[in-house]
Image 1: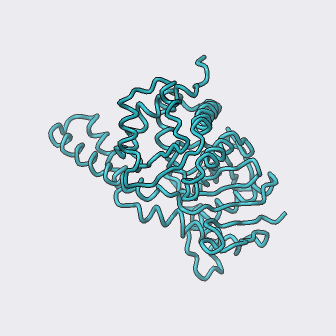
Image 2: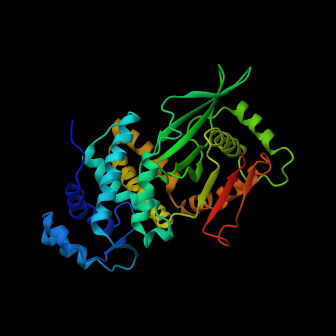
Image 3: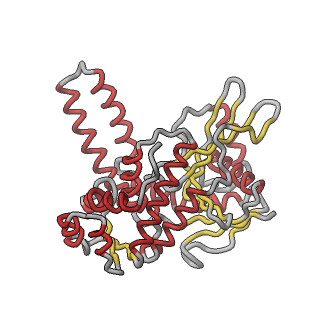
Length: 354
């Protein structure tokens, strides 16, 4: 069994690989890292090559957002702890683990989850991310029944996300009977050490949906003058609220849009177009190649999913999510919204009454 990743390995990968990927905008937007304690001695002690330090210094003040790092050692120690805890979590859920790839992916993507205030307090952001990963409060590795009547059963299961997603975990609810199955939209959530639940999105499932069950879900719109949101998302959130209540979690935070999200999806849009056009040309030159045919179909679906969708994704993670939370007030009188987002803070605070 491989020992845990050590901090010196993390520092080396950050300077040998991650910083080049970020500065080249491979997958994620460019970011400046400002080590304000001038701790370059730490890098030399870890045998970082001078060419890599020179590259870092050359791009120190690119025209992009900057992360202020006041304690370099603490910064890399948090990243190391997050990596090791993430690997442990993936293993618990039976996910395939390639340790070095996991380190590289995490160092490249973890910044995508930052809010605007995290830029000036990055260690607190990393501290929270570590709490989220370690928190097992709602973990449900296998499907379990949470509601059962004569005809339908509702199951729930926790799944872990990759670091390009908004949160560490998602809760998946599925409605089933003998012949019908409907996977409700996923709740993207995290929980901190203070038992506060952070909800970053309600993400539509890509799995097949049963139209008969969906028609029943539309009963949630009865008496609602302006439904605004799909009833399947309302149903999923109501179920999640009940799970939180049963686990003595009464405080919910709906954060503002993560600061790198919009440009990240712009980059995905550009990349999807590039790869889709390349595979079309390659397939047209080799129309009998089964692999290319399957690859074309995969990249076509990806292209249709992300190309020029940054505005829609931004809406789903901001306005629609806020509409959803206000919509819950129509169904559960024990839910209270206690502030106005962007007026009394850059997040929405929701209280669940006991």
